[in-house]
Length: 101
Image (cartoon, rainbow, N blue to C red; front, side, top):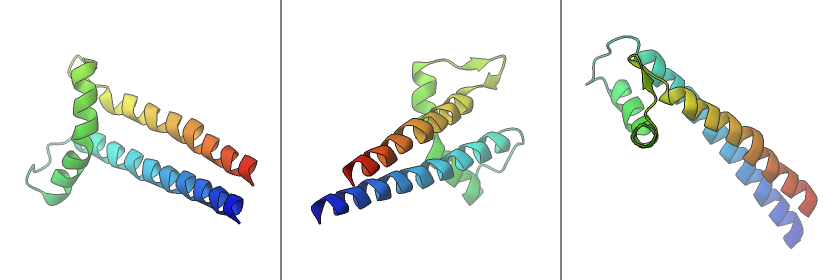
């Protein structure tokens, strides 16, 4: 019974992580698209997108300067990291779940 529970737990963690990363990927894309226009900074949606993405984007900008000619490449790096995590980490968790059960 314990082995089956562990397998289901790993599958659930992999699934939730995959969905969370997928949603965050679309949030990053939405923020990047909004940066092409001048949205109202007091709009609740704009504030939400900024508040949920700036901790990651700002952290990366402070460590690696990725602004070239006024073009911020930080969202692209974050999107590549999300694709990597979805391809590697989620797949590894699914594989571990199969090995356990």
